[in-house]
Amino acid sequence: MKNKIGIFPGSFDPITVGHKHVILKAAEIVETLIVGIGINSNKKHHFTIEERVKWGKKTFLNHPNILVKKYEGLTVDFARKENAQFIFRGLRSSLDFEYEKQIAESNNIINKQIETIFLLANNKYAMISSSIVREIIKTGGNIDEFVPIDINISKP
Image (cartoon, rainbow, N blue to C red):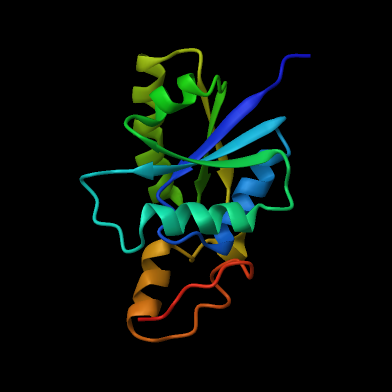
């Protein structure tokens, strides 16, 4: 049987319990899931790529079919390089769908062999985003309910 490979790309700045939930759902669909932590020079990240990769690896340490890798450039090119057949994306709302649909259609023009699969976030995670977590961190709030227990984010 051909090894089905998928990627789940994102900036994960930081990784949240919502990310973890959807990534675990995606990992049940493929033999190997690569969590691709993107380096985007146009985006100002709050946490370093090293921190984000470390947290990703720690979060999925006990999931042998989940790998965590950093990448630069187009997600569809990263998927091709990793021999992935699927790009997984989590959806929290209809706004996410509209945004992600445009990216998926563009990716399909670039590479028709890679299919985008949308997975719905569980309702209890739908309001969680990395930007909300960053704001809680900036104001000194408690983020324990929003990030995987396995990671320790230093407060400023």
